[in-house]
Image (cartoon, rainbow, N blue to C red; front, top):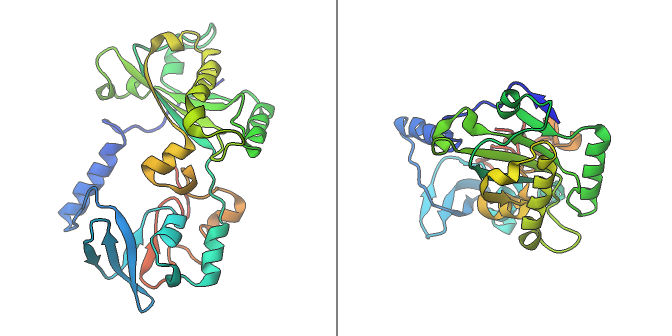
Length: 280
């Protein structure tokens, strides 16, 4: 277990407060925000993006269209099949985007006790990485390559309520765990059946360092890669939209020569699919 004494930067009230602030800022500058309005397709006329059609049938026209969805959704899901050149379509299809991470949230009756020799104050106010060695990480990743979740997963654990008491009732806490490696496609079974059992594997791993963690749990909520795809809408459940590899980074992200543009005039990309990638 490794403790990083500097934790993540936290926003009081949770990350949803960031999007609310962005919305307020945009609206003060004249933007209109339509919540719960799913985009069905990008309207392309004469090779140029001119607006969007919503699921409810409404259409909205604009000078440009900017998509924050993952690149495969943006280019393969929102455009009509004939709107994208054949080679560009093949290039997008070839991008690697299968997610390998899971998120586990715990509602706790109090902070857990860490094993002897671990500074309780430091542990509860730090990012806790459970990945003792390179061999440990290599084995964890190697299993995922063959469709098996890591028997001994890498876990990044934190307690946001140590910094932000607004997230839980007095005396209560929450824990957030980023878990790797959990392949999107399982060799056996599916995530809907496997998720609850795998959460036990994650808790077993944490319990080696925080022996009474299970005694403190009031509720558990986990997101598998499949859940991330269903709930958030990112294909493959990849939190970075596409893999962060040398072949898909820097000037190659999302594809060589694209930058934030696309082959469709007036249609632009932003978000984790583009340089420099995700990580908020």
